[in-house]
Image (cartoon, rainbow, N blue to C red; front, side, top):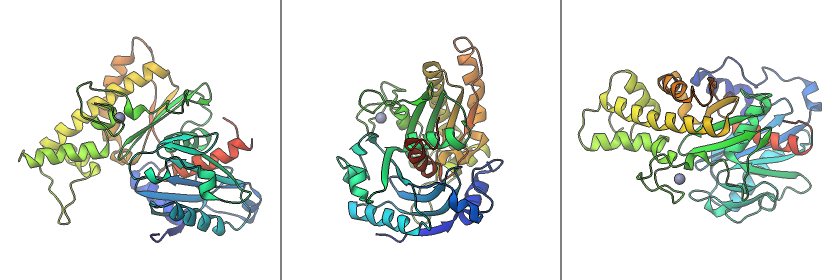
Length: 351
Ligand SMILES: [Zn+2]
């Protein structure tokens, strides 16, 4: 297994938060005292397609000890990673919460479907895979745990109707309706990234065509910009010496600085995102709409251009402006929310 990188919360999180400029409020404690040792703790694990993160999390959402590593590619790699986190806990923890890409049966912790990098987990019971003895293991879809983190400690604290989109390599979604996370008959509900935005659009990883994920995701924005470069359109950015295409953050910045290709790519992607947001607002009537994931690092440039359009399109049916905010727990939101699963299950917290 690739080497895991440990950090104290104080070392890693403020730097991540500072990078994104959303550091006005954060759940991360400034300091820890001996009294914190008495607080119930849980381990949160966020298994993504490229990276895995974990932390020991306190009841008020503070991250005591965090670690990140490249995603494991085998069951034993995942076991080793989680067991190393358990060993790091200086005081007993209440359980292990896991957020994982794909369709997860929260009752059994079975990974029903997770196409792509984590397909080795398909069909597995995460509680068995982890094999943590008497420790309770809870599991849920990664976007849902990110939403749970925001509802417990972040920008949706105390809210009971919330929609969240995680904009990264793909597009994840999660919905809280009247205080209950939407699961649907088979656990697939809330996969908002796979809402059809263009019926004649491209083939998606999910088998559908023209999903939101195929029109607004970091890979889509990168590949759309690259396609312009490939056609020799007047693009200011270039392929790096190591062969990497410009990333979304660079493309958003270039758009703001007058790069015509970047402007076109970003405008088109934002048109699709805006249209999707309007549909979600009309469908779920939330109190607040949260945008999370890596693309959020693009900052106000992401929201400002579409806010007017959204307001105009929702004025009649909704008749009010719904706040569109960024995820507050930056970087480790899924980890905090995964630990939150344990606290919720053991009635230490409630939504
Ligand atoms: Zn799809």
